[in-house]
Length: 358
Image (tube, rainbow, N blue to C red; front, side):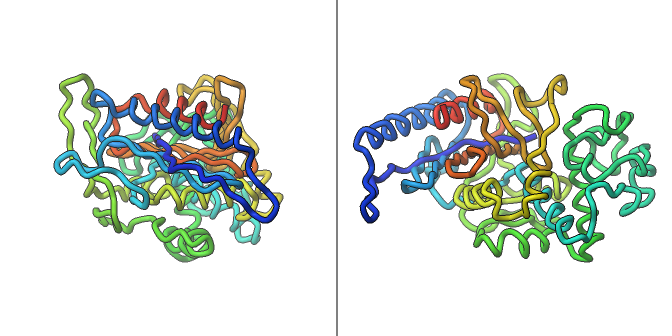
C-alpha cells in the first residue's frame, strides 16, 4: 500500500529584518528534533529496517534532516539528504492532481464515466459496469473495483458508490484516462504539469521496464512478504514496477516531496473548485485500511491520537515505505522514508507524526 519516515537537520535560529525567534521556541524545536531522532533510531534498532530518514520543514525555519541506520547493508554506507527512493502510493497524489488540472481546463469532467473514456475495459478485464463508475469514484476509491492488477483474475466487483475500497486499479485506470485525454504518456503530464514548474529535479515516473533508480539512492530491501525473525532479506533496488504505474510507480526525494506537498496543500497547483474537490473526503471506516482517515482525490486526512488532523499520503512498495504529511495549509510538513518493508510502518509513522504535529 504505502509508507514513509521523516527527517530533520538542525533548526537554525533565523533573524530576518526585525523578526527574531523566541529562544524558548528554539529550545522546544531542539527537543522536538531529539524526539524525532529517537523515533528514527528506534525504528531501525534490532533489525526493524535498514535505514530511515525524516525531514521537517516549516515557513519560519530552515529544514531539519535526521537519519538512522544505513543506505547499504553490504557496505554500511549511511543514508543522507538528496537520496532518490520509490514513493509507492504517494504517486496517487500526483495522478489525482493531473486529473483535476485537466478537469479545470474542461478536458474531462469528474462525473464522466470510465466507459466514456475507456469503453469496454472494466467490463472485459474486471467484470464491472464502466457506465456506473465515474472518474471521481476512481479517485476516491468508491468505484467498487477490487484491488488487482489488470490481466490477473480479479475478485468480484461491488456496487459503485457503496463504500471505500483501496485499490490500485482505480488509479491505473485514471492514468489511462489521462493518457487518452492528453494523447501523451502520464509520465510526460507529471513532468510538464508538476515536476518542471515546481523544480522537482528528482521526481519522475519511470518508463516501462526501467529497472534502475536515477541519481543517488539508498538500496531498497524487501522480505518479499516473508514474515518472522528468520525472514530472508532481498535487495530489490533494481526492479520493474511498471505494474504500479499511476497508482504507485514514481520515484522522488524528501525535498521534492516537501515542495510538492506544500504547493498542493497551499492551493498553488489547483484552482479553488478543484482544490475543494481534492480535499473532500469519504470515510474509510470499516475498510481495514489506515485507521482514523478520510480519503479525498489522491490525498487523505489522518486524525492523530492527540486530535490533530494532518493531510497528505503514504506509500508502500517492495523495499520502500514513505510518508508525506502536513497541516492543511502546507506551512508545516514532514517527509520520511524507510528503505525496507518489514517494519511496523503504521505505528512508526504515526509516532513520527505525533512527535512533529502534536
